[in-house]
Image (cartoon, rainbow, N blue to C red; front, side, top):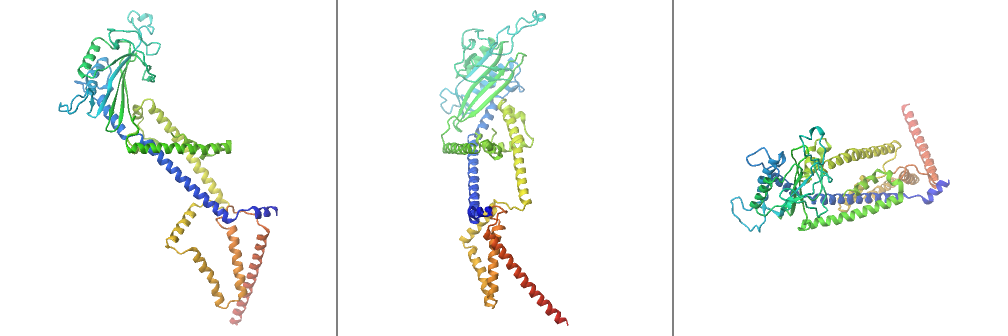
Length: 516
């Protein structure tokens, strides 16, 4: 009885429950729309910074400096250099021709070059290229005693301890003297070593003929020695048509085993960020992303403070944390397609590694780990957990509380009513209520009509409370008033059954009399 009194005093009415459900569904739809806007903004922000022209600029420069063959040797380019002779042929051939474009294809100067080169007529060579060499000292390794008579010199692999800092060769210009680095640029991670800054450095001239004579002089005076371990060729370009800078580094490593290992880095970047209207649109997306990030972070911190350790027991909270941590392929379509192919097991790992020897494998391993071992398992766990809950609800006869379809249907019907494409529900209920006047016009007993209307009201009220899909729980305690109504309803049903039974007995007696 105490429970019944509590329910009667503090229980939630059906109207309030229905209102709460509408608020819950509306809030869910608003959050869904908000997350959808956030996803669109994140996609624009992510892929808006990666221009397809970056890929094509890298491809053009790669074709010019990496794939161009050495004159009179159609089998050797920068990628296939294996000897010092091939390296000098590349320096005096494809590199020299690729860096200096002082005239158009018909040998006419159609514009003032201002003492600068226009690679492919569109890309301005910024400054002058720089060539840098790192060497190791002699006797940095120990020769076995039995071979010391045959090998008097020994050059170990490159390390900062083995690096040669002394002048050599002609000892005249900067290329023969060691120079320390004045910048804090990161070291280069190569195939056979990690190389520091500084070294034997010289810059190329703005004149093609002077640069060629410089290469010949260095080759004749043995600028590359047995102690040479790596040579860097660095230069930068700017394309005003697409507002992109291209930073190029060609690397030739000379391992202690002999031969040459070549590698390269081509980075197209947009250093001048805000130029066009589209750039300012991207800037607005960046600001919007920061606002989203601040709001989401604040919400999650509040949840952590409220639920403490229970916060981390929900899968959805982990997904929201993963969303907060979200901070190239040629085009957006190709990127999506390539990642789907990776999920299906169809991928070109060699191509990914060639694009970037360090970041490529890291990206591949990270993508596989999160997609296969985290996201897919988490997705399956969510589906399995939801299926179990729904199955358990239906096994005890409980209908779903979150009726999104019903609310959408109701909104659709309200819209039709406002557009006068459908009759109002109130008018339909009024027409149903008018049906009670028909028995009166046909001279039915007034007491029977009133008793039938009373039973109908009881039935509708009890069904709405105990069998409506709008209630929050199918199992609710009964108050004293409700129990009295149920009892009266049962008594009236019993009277009706008795009345119907007597009528049936009378009909049966009349039928028996007619047979005789």
